[in-house]
Structure formats: structure tokens, C-alpha cells
Amino acid sequence: MENEIATIYILENPEKSVIKFATGYQLRFENVLKDVFGVVSVNDLQMMLQFNKGFQESICKKNGIALNNISMDKIIRVANKMELLQLRKQSIEKLGKETYLTIPRPFDPIIKLQEGIFKWDELNSSYIPDNLGA
Image (cartoon, rainbow, N blue to C red; front, top):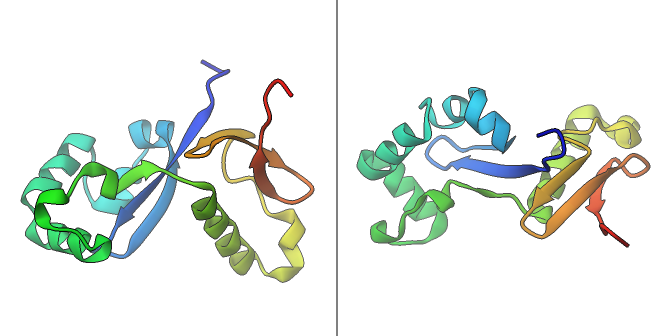
């Protein structure tokens, strides 16, 4: 289990304008779903997605889709490198420019994004592609 690479997800609640990154572990065992969506389980989130009209409308508006095209991947999906760079930019803004090179690592040293496996680069305080076996 310790060799498992953490997949990073992005959770987005357009109704409340909340976006949060989380690992699969955090989705299962922490209150991330409650923090973002106000529900405690994926099953509750599916019910919310199916029956909460205001939530449905906010997803349609944000994604420019029709009601019948709403799915879980519109609100929870594997994050991509560009989204993770946005998180880094927000961290820099919060910490201030003088701490630019000392941004704390937000996740495990090795993570999985849509584009593949990435590793933390201490020099740049950023995740970079990991060329496994190279």
C-alpha cells in the first residue's frame, strides 16, 4: 500500500464557487466532500446531482451543457497539470513573493495527474513529469 501513487482529484461546486484539490484517500476518509458539497459520501453527492435543481443549474451554466449531460465527472475528476499550476499560483499569492522558493509540497512526493506521473521538484517547488525507468 505504501508504494501506491496518489491520484490528485479536483472537486468543483459551481453553486457555491468552491474548488478544492484532494487525493483519493482524502475523498474516502476525510471531510473533503462535506467541505466542498455539504454531503458526507459519494452516494449522497449522486443524489444531490440527481435531485438538487439549483446545483444542476449551476453545473449546466458553468460547463455550458444541457441538463441531460450532467455527470459526476463535471464536479469530480482527475486534475491536470494546468489546474495544479493554478494551485501553485494561489499558494505563491497566499505566501507572498518572498517565499516563492519555499512553497510547501501540497501532496505526496509522487502523484498521478491526467497527463501521467509527476514528482515533486524541491528546487522549483513544483511537480514535474517523472520519467520512470529513464
